[in-house]
Length: 353
Image 1: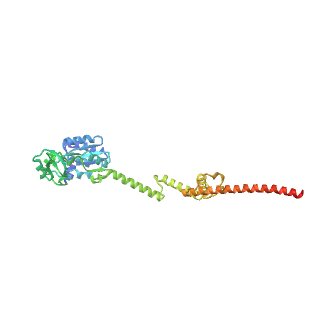
Image 2: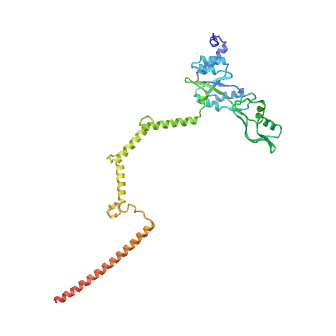
Image 3: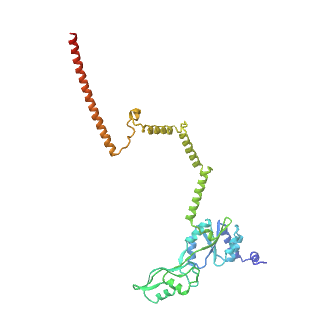
């Protein structure tokens, strides 16, 4: 008989069964259930995290064997989480979706000092600047761990950003002391999510670590592209029906105006188009007398430059002078005619006595 079969069939003490029942009740009361890593979290910080999760999620810590039994007895098929129950872990339940749970746990993490023997979670850098520490043997310790440190202006200063340990390397006791002296906290303490089971799917942390803003932008871009395809293909949907009807209405109106189709819906547009065409044609006619009276003076005179204005003024003056001369000539002709008429009358009188 396998060890797993023995575990499921053995009779356990009453207190253990009560603990399993309690954990099962917790698991069955939430839509999403996950396993979190508790290693390296001080008890005080763990209690603070419990309080922060109150109202959104519930953390339960028990013996691994009892948590595995509870996962097996839960109503949901949580057996996939059993392989994640190893080391210092706890079970967490929430009605939030797995992505929301992951974001909440990541946001709750706090900086913490790193101890000798731990593995660096990322590159450890001592930043450039004044350490605020008086000259002394500490400058040698800084140099020994790889920092570009010197004594300047009465204090120990780091002259440039110095990477003293790379990600994945083990922290030495000397480096741990130096970082503690500089109050550098290179790691984050919090609940590390190992996996979440929700709606029949087991989510790994890598699946949940997404950029929400980027993901939202991608979804919006996809929705916009789909809407464009629907409109261009004239495929009506609840989201595009109004736009398609509006486009069809505009196209129908444009065709009606272009073909001069008589319709009450476009009568005003047709009249406006005809009026515009009539005024454009009238603007090409130089003789204002040839225009209907209502159009005279409404159309703007053709624009001319300064030389044209002077030429026009000269032509106008010449015309006026010519008109004056013609008028004087006509007046003289009239006087001559009158004199001739008078002389003729006297001659006729003398002729006939």
